[in-house]
Length: 338
Image 1 (cartoon, rainbow, N blue to C red):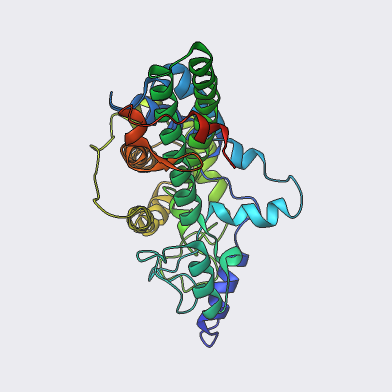
Image 2 (cartoon, rainbow, N blue to C red):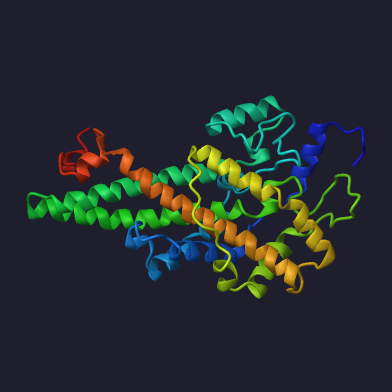
C-alpha cells in the first residue's frame, strides 16, 4: 500500500480484497453453534427450543443464509453484505464512520453515517443489524407463542382452543426458522475476519509482521473446523450467561468489538502454526471463537425469551402479560380486526 493513499482509498481497497462469497465457519461451524446453543439453554426457555430435535433443526437452518447465496440479483447484492462488517483496526467503519463499539440505533442511521464518511452499508457490511433484526424478530415470535399457549389454556370453547393450538404449532416452526437465522449471523460475528478490513488475509496494508496477505478465510473457518473441532471442544469452553443490562444495539456492538480484538492473534497463530494441521494453539483458538458464538446465541435467546413477556402482540395490540394473566382474550386481535 502506498503511503500517500487517503484513508478512504485504503478502506475501499481492503473491502475489495474480500472474497465474493465469504462463508463464516462453513456448514460444520454454523451447525455446531446452533445445536450447542440450544442444548445449553436454561429450563426457563420453552422446551420446543431445547429438545435434541430442536437443536438439530436450528443447526440446519443456521446454514441457510449461506446456502441462499448465488440466488441472483438483487438478492445477493442486498443480502451478502449482511454477513460482515469491515471495521478498521481502530474500530472505525469507513473513513470517519461510526465505531463498531458505538453503533447507531438503526440501520438507516448507520447507512447515513457511512455515506457521510464516503461509503455505505453495502460496501462496509451491515452484520450488526442482521443480528439485531433477527433478535427482535425472535422476541416477537416468542411473544406470540406465549400468547398462543395462554389463549389455548384460557379458551372458552373447543373451537377457540383449536385455533390457538394450530397457531402455536405454526409459530413454533417460524420461531425455529428465525432462530436459525439469528444463529447464523451470531456465528458470523464470532469470526474475526468477518469484522475486519483484513477479511481474507492482511491485504494491502502495512505488514511489518509479514502476515499472510490473502487466502486465509476459507482455510481458517471451513476445512480446519470440519477436520479438527469436535462438539466437546466447544461445549466445555462455554462461559456463563452474561446479562449486559443494555440495549440490543450495545450488546451486539460489545460482542463484535470483542471479536475484532482477536484479529492480531488469529494472524499470529496462522503465521506460527497455520491452519492446515490441528495443533494446540490453533485448535484452542478456533474452539474458543466457536464457544463465544455459542454462548452469545444462548444469551440472546434467553434475553429474547424474557423480553417477550414485556411486549404487545396482535392488532389491535394487546400486552402479553394481560393475555397470560387471562385478563384479555387475544382471539379477535390475532385473527385480525382490521
